[in-house]
Image 1 (cartoon, rainbow, N blue to C red):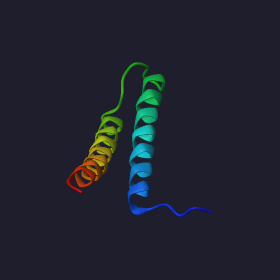
Image 2: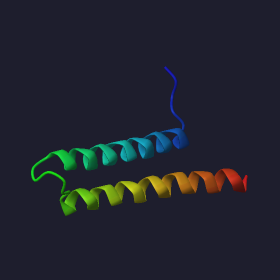
Image 3: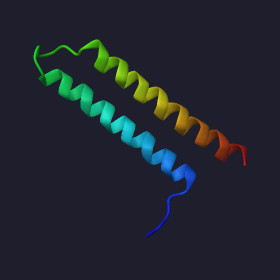
Length: 66
């Protein structure tokens, strides 16, 4: 079994956060009341975007610097 490096683990976790956040927002459209998303779902999605952006941004910054 291959061990993940630190950067691979961070990239996988960032992609997982984006996937979970997107799915949660899509499910928010179908739950009652239909067509509205609760503010807590939007807050969580914003946190997912911040996390993924910071992880992927730092990883790309470091790879460019080398």
